[in-house]
Length: 302
Ligand SMILES: [Zn+2]
Image 1 (cartoon, rainbow, N blue to C red):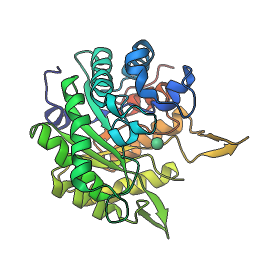
Image 2 (cartoon, rainbow, N blue to C red):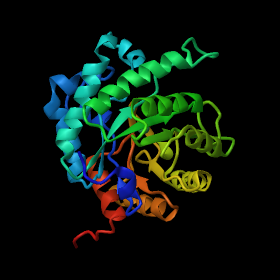
Image 3 (spheres, rainbow, N blue to C red):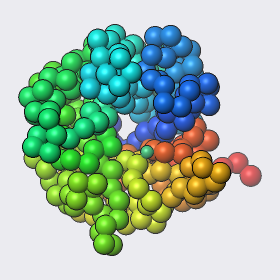
Image 4 (cartoon, helix red, strand yellow):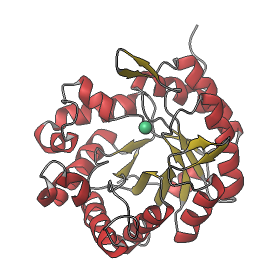
């Protein structure tokens, strides 16, 4: 375990989180649409290699390979009976790759459907599912829980409750994905940036912010960051942008932001008051290395 608690370290300096996992797994041979979580057990060297690449890029926070780790999301691959072993392995692999000077974030993504009354799943059922996943992530050595890519504050709140039920002292991070609707940043469910922050904080989230997003430019993330920081008050804010807004090329989604653009964005996010900077879709260890140098104010050798 890391010696300094995450929130204590965060009060001293800004931290750098890691970047995309899925595309890195695919670059190592994971078939599109296949479950990447089985690699935590079957190919831990590949998953650990990705963590290590981000670690070597200067990332302080390492995110476990467990985005689709609830029983609901694993059921899409017929793996719902393996929640505990796959999530525990995810945290163990990250812990081993991260070493003593990084913090492991146990990653919890959306369960993949809507809560009642829109969908069929009750808050109690979801809480139990999140709790099973989070308990395994903590057992495997996660230092904090990251409830990410949220659209519905109600789901994010259940995620916070589940984490705090497992261990009331564990730091919980909540990040939402936003899009621009009528010129305003809103989640897919229509929640405003300010409302999304307020509800997560009221539920007990220790760090709040945004990851991913739909068709947001790097300028958009900086503008959104200002709104999140204003809404979050004293609560630290994390921003994990995509590598710019994507382009379609031959049916493929391509992210084109350069290391220089991502580094400049990281500097602007810091100036906006963001405390943790990382990356989402399209980001790589090379882009995170440039962002990390910017956050840590390290000049690139000429
Ligand atoms: Zn993303």
